[in-house]
Amino acid sequence: MNAVNPGLLRSSDAICCQVALGLVGVEHQSPSTKAATIYDVAAAAGVSPSTVSRAFSRPGRVSAKTSARIHQVAADLGYRAPQVARADAAKQSKLLAISLTDITNPFFFSIIRGAEHVAVSEGYSILLIDSEESEELERRLYDRTMPLVDGVIIATSRLSDTALRSAAKVSPTVILNRLVPGVPSVVTDYARGMRRALEHLAELGHRRVAYVSGPSASWAEVARARAFREGCFELDLADHRVGPIPPTVRGGMGALPQVREKRVTAVVCFNDMIAIGLMRAAKATGMTIPSDLSVIGFDNIFASDLVTPGLTTVAAPLSLLGERAARSVIAMATGQEHELNPESPSVLPMRLIVRETTTAARRLPA
Picture 1 (cartoon, helix red, strand yellow):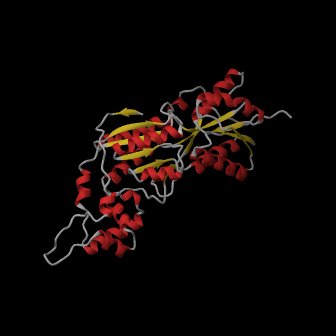
Picture 2: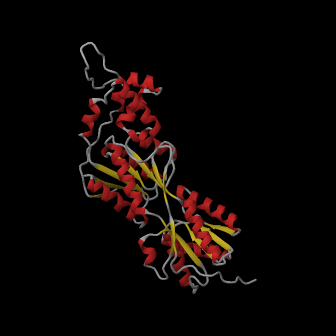
């Protein structure tokens, strides 16, 4: 766990249970008028008292439609948000956590920077949680960190959906590049990005292509592999799969023998790190990229434009991912309106950036 922009480490007390028990502020309209309670609002809106509590104290935990209905009913009944909620806002730690699986992976750099820009502008600091691809370590770090922060951005996770939903009940949470029902998320359009990559290869005459897959526990891997299969079927390409491969340069280097066994003319890799490793191994064996093998990566990390030849890749708006997540988490933590719906992810576009690692398909020997 590494800290960036050190901030105060102080717990932010949960208020939901206090509100649900009826510990609410009362605004007297007149000596003979009894103020509406959380139970009155719940009965009129047709929801539970705890849902009313979350609508006011943790808006990100309630769907936009339900939240709007609750607020309207509360206004009609003259119900006011509990004083304890407003007092709690003053106790915020002004600290956000970003959880990721490998701090050395350049994929996370732009996400962190985007989130940091928003956090600093709002007076928050960032705490990094690096689980090192370990589910057990990730769980322990969450247990230790959640009470200290006002919100969490989960950039990648190896935990189950159930575990992530449980974590989201402790602190305002936004998940990136993964769909977890009931938790706000921001994802990139993997299907369209993969389709653009395959269309590019088809236009160059490639007919036998392979997907070099990443970690099997990764939600992004599942989404990209599915998009690859569907795209190959629609474009009438012979699809092959290699892996799973560790999402690192070393992992990509080790994948070359499997790629050559498939006798393909082009590959799409899970990420740019694997693609760069594959290119390095190919060069060491005397292969020429792209004459002998066209290569496409994913994510457009900064190194993809620095390697030789320049890597053709599917670009994700990584900085925007971090910015949108940070903005929404802060809004959730402070009880403000935000743009994310727990039941429907925010989808960001992807685009193909053509550089120097793709060319017309070579003729395979009989």
